[in-house]
Length: 107
Image: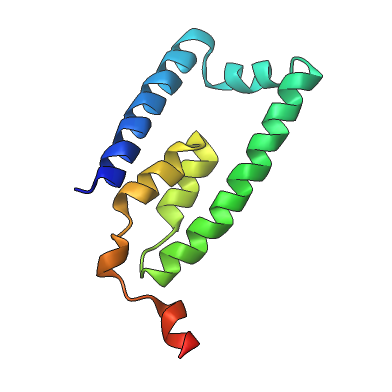
């Protein structure tokens, strides 16, 4: 396992622990209720939705290029936020083992 995958696994484990703690404190729906308490948290929520939307677009395209089904990761992202892309990055083939289609087009 590469150092990049190890770093992603550490971030994923820490984020899952944080998410479980947050859900244990306020509940799954409580997270969204808290996000709507003032304009600052609404702005952060909107920013998160935009960022995860962009990540979803990239992830779907990238998964298809690598011959993977993006749907499990899309569902994880819609239900659990950043956990979906982090799991995808762990499962994604290493770049050195995948042919680069964009390089073939350049020649």
